[in-house]
View 1: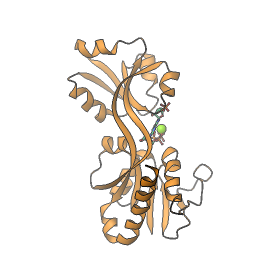
View 2: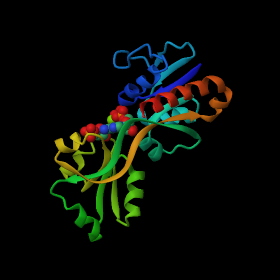
View 3: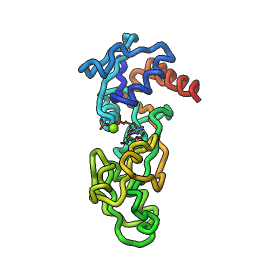
View 4: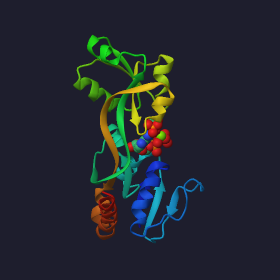
Length: 214
Ligand code: PRT
Ligand code: MG
């Protein structure tokens, strides 16, 4: 049995077509069932549903043989011991800095005064501002980052942006693009050795589907 870890939402939805290209179907809809282990039409493949940030942990410790996870998660939480054979080019977005429209970011960056930055991505944000030589006070949040500049909690946020609609709806502007993000296939190295043939076959399914899209 091969276990594939996915998270509900965009990663699940954007992984489905890659599997479907090889005739692999997940037999239950995560939005309709409360089950966390979903069978597929392949007797030796099942999907487990975990939180997006837990996918690397499941794969690292062998709770799943492989998984699909955002590069943001891999960078922020570390990817120790994980084999990353493929950029699946799905769930694409970017990590950006955003501020209130009336905040003078350029001025704040050159002034030497400490910038208050709220984010879930403290490692990415710390590296980014350090590379610019800007001192920041980092405020760790777990969600709704957009609220921080509106309430005076922070001057800036570091968050994922895809269409930009969320920023716009909250009167925030993107002032800097830190990095582009997509989701990657991550593989447990021991599983790759122990279940070589079926694992290689599945990695190949993902490779072909990704190439076909490009
Ligand atoms: O939502 P939950 O707290 O359960 O977990 P999660 O946010 O970790 O999971 P999920 O499913 O939302 O995101 C999983 C992965 O999808 C992320 O790790 C990214 O790699 C990728 N991804 C791609 C995104 C987005 N696009 C995205 N737009 N993840 C989140 N967003 C959010 C963003 O944080 C912001 O709140 O969508 C909002 C912005 O979207 P736009 O289109 O309005 O710009
Ligand atoms: Mg989310």
